[in-house]
Length: 239
Image (cartoon, rainbow, N blue to C red; front, top):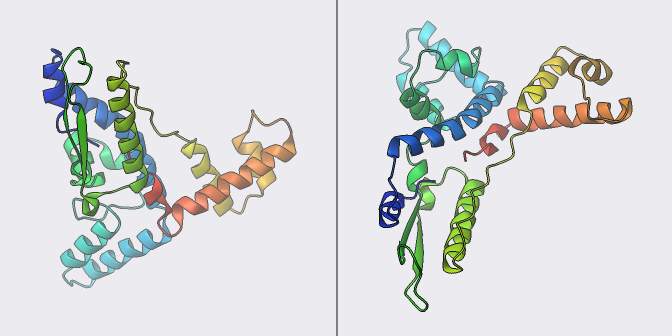
């Protein structure tokens, strides 16, 4: 989440604040998560049903706008329009700029949920000097409680490092799973392939034998189901 005091802090330290660079880095960090969220969301049976509902309204000539806006926000598409589940993330974003992608897939309030207010000594901490931070959290704007916990923990670590005259800790990102493989396993199961057939087609080179590879394929399918049924894709939060 965005630290609204970042520019002021860097200026106090004498460094140059490059807002465009920060914005681009944030966008690139979130891009794969936006992609995989969409890829699982478009396979969600409930999302497909919502898409069909809006298409039926259009065919009958009925006003579809209000229903589409309601359903789009329900499925966390923030430009208030449903997107074709038959199109991949890359197909949807072809020719679109950063702004369209961000406005579509990121809650506009997401970066406003956490504010950090603090006082510090700019270069060398003076023993006994005032060093206080306050976290202001608006829980009505929190998009991911998991990520909120990580951000608060990260900032506590950074503040502690500063008071100990150590360099701030580098932020760690969420672990990116092999979602492409998981999607492929789900699609192959949809074609009624056995786990042995999937194992041979997908390949699990890090597994020591066929039995462990088959177990891995089953795990991938379970995760596929978790991410596509009942809105499980919502748990893929943004860094």
